[in-house]
Length: 229
Ligand code: DC
Image (cartoon, rainbow, N blue to C red; front, side):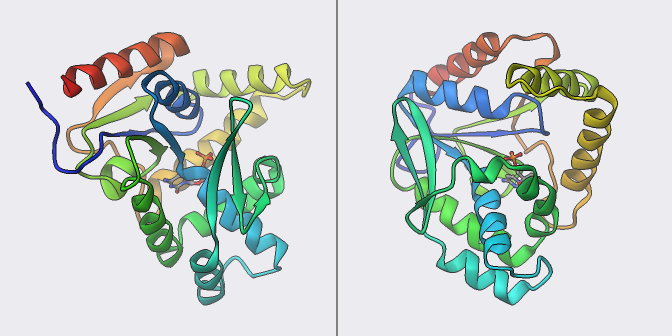
């Protein structure tokens, strides 16, 4: 039975708070199914990086709108890795730097920027099957997605994962500092006026606190296959 909903391509929307394992899960699900992986957070990071580079004030809505509108954002695959380019420049590494992460909240809260980036994200949904991850994918970007997932995990578990991740990169991190930064990001994501983080209608909630990444990926792939049959 074909249970596919509206639209030509199969779309999987994955939302959830920072550290819930969204990115890794979405990337691996995309690899397993041969779908495109759309990292929407990377697009907010790209606009933030552009604003910092061009010394645009983070509260200057009209200048930010011009930057976002003009930005040509594309994703390229290289040696099994996905790179992000903005206006032809590879900024994969730069968008993960703390300067960008620390400056992102007002940009992600800006409704003009969000509208522009949502339109750009929807274009990817017209090109092929995809797995998109972010905060508003199932609620705003692709409300008719064929499968919606809400990944969650207790804040302490997410903070511990972040500390381990940093340790693997040789960075020693203080749990208390990471934990409070994460609570702040949760509050920013959930309490902002425009497109706050919410579990979308019809989303399957997975608590990843007790799941390994492989188990999360298996669950999502299984759900997707059931709906593709
Ligand atoms: O997932 P991430 O950490 O790369 O996201 C970076 C920031 O962008 C994060 O603070 C939340 C925001 N974001 C958003 O508001 N909407 C999305 N669809 C994706 C990310």
